[in-house]
Length: 150
Image (cartoon, rainbow, N blue to C red; front, side, top):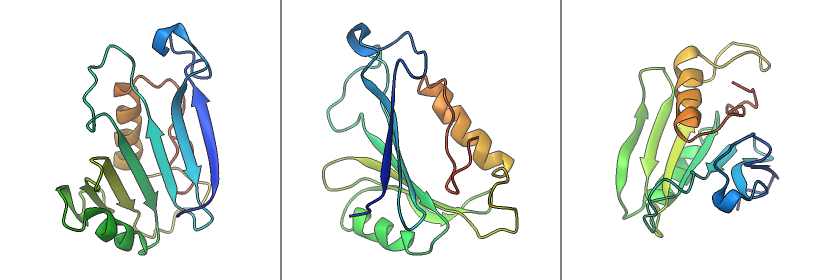
């Protein structure tokens, strides 16, 4: 559906001592960078986190293209929405639908800004993603919608 380049990171890549079953080769974090400039991120949690079928997966889809609204609409059509798509305190649009198989999504549409493409994301966005990564037990970098490490 989206195409692009998939990058995978193992528990060993991030130096995490919490690899499932002690297997450091298991996937911990993944990023899909699409040809249209979108970023899809997914990550897993350590085995100490209780397993809840259908509630243990969340995906991030972000970029600065208004076509992301269409993805949000298709993902949420007739389904639960935990955060309606709308402008957030940091100036971007974000929303969280739950798709037809129970997967939670965070759709993030970055406001077009004048900062350089290689520059950092604004503090609230960068800090929010970094805090989410720390809560998920990741030691590596989190990537912003424009491909920056934060």
